[in-house]
Length: 196
Image 1: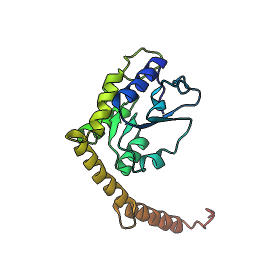
Image 2: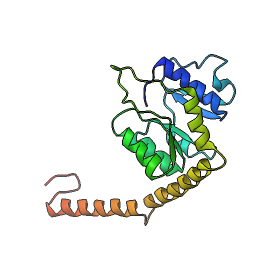
Image 3: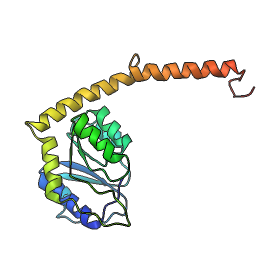
Image 4: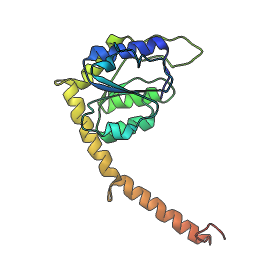
C-alpha cells in the first residue's frame, strides 16, 4: 500500500490506459482516483477495486501476466512465489533494495524510474504515464525481455513453492526449529501450558 498525489494517480491511470493491457487496479477506499468517471481506463479493459483485495489470490490467477508493485517485501515474495514478473515502483526504505534484487539480480522486473524517497513533507517528481506504460509493455511483451522475465519468474515461482512443500528447504528448516523449541521447552521442565 502506498499513497500517491492526485497528479500521480492521474498519470498512473493514464499509464495503464496507454499500456494497452488489461488490468486489475487496487486503490484505497476514498481515493481520488477517477473510479466513477466513464472515460477512465477501467471502462475499457480494467477493473478497479476500492479497498482491500486478495492479493495472493489475484497474483496466482493464470490471467495475471505482471504486477506493478511498491516492492514491499511481502508483495515481492508473493509475486515471486506466484511466478509473476514485476513493474517496480519503490517508495520508502528497503523497497529500493528490493527493487534492485528483483530487477538486477533476479531479472524478473522492470523499474518505472522511481528515484525519490517518498515523503509527504517533500515534493518529488511525478512518474509520467508514458514511462509507466513502457515498463508495463516491457514486462508483458511477447518477445525479448518480456518473455525472458516471465520464464525466469515462473522458474523462481516453482522453486519458491517447492521450498515450502514437505521435504523442501524452508519446510525442513521450520520443522527443525519446531523440534528444537520443543526440546528446549522440555529441558527446562515446562508443561504444555507453559508452566514450570
